Image (tube, rainbow, N blue to C red; front, side, top):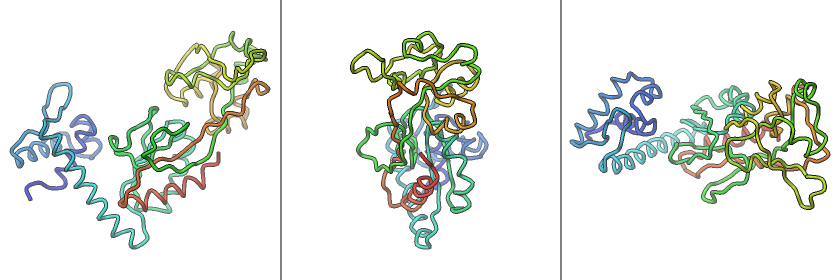
Length: 298
């Protein structure tokens, strides 16, 4: 065999990372070492796999074909490792979990010390993305998604639902007053999402308007992450509509105050863990799902 698995891993990591420098950081190797491994692989295959420019890396046609085979080989190796260790009843191997930053910070990260104590052979990789990631493209094993699921090709484990509330800090309310109606809310500083647009429709009934079951806000400031919105609300910047999973402790401790409760519809966001079924992942995926479902109280 001309190539080594280390060289395959370097090649795949370079492509997934988008640069040799980022791949070196991820692999905990030197930039020169990763560059040499990639060059050595191309020399062994006697073909160029990647076109290098000053700004980016681009796969050649041969590189595209080889990347698919390289991924399959590395996946088969993980499956072989899993088949040996799972026979001993001990999940092991790398597990990549992705979630929006608020859910990762408030519902996943606080429990990972306990998870690692139970499953020391599972190597966790936690990533945060504010968008819906492609599990195969990003090499994610489990993604936590908030809201209705769209992709029917994925397996899903329901983790619960989280209520939405309109909130502001005591300092903001002391300075600007508490709005008592949707119309009064229009005069306040509202904190909204950059995207998607439907997150800027708050579950508020507009009094006299028949059938008006949501209120489209005109944000005074926007952000892409719910955690950024939470921090803005905590600082007294304005009013936000956020889920209980990230604000329950703030409300309990008086850092945020729910408002307009009499006009609020009981809208709850479903929270699900989604994954592709794979023999090589079954053990560690299932142990993570069972663990997080028992600890996330929604």
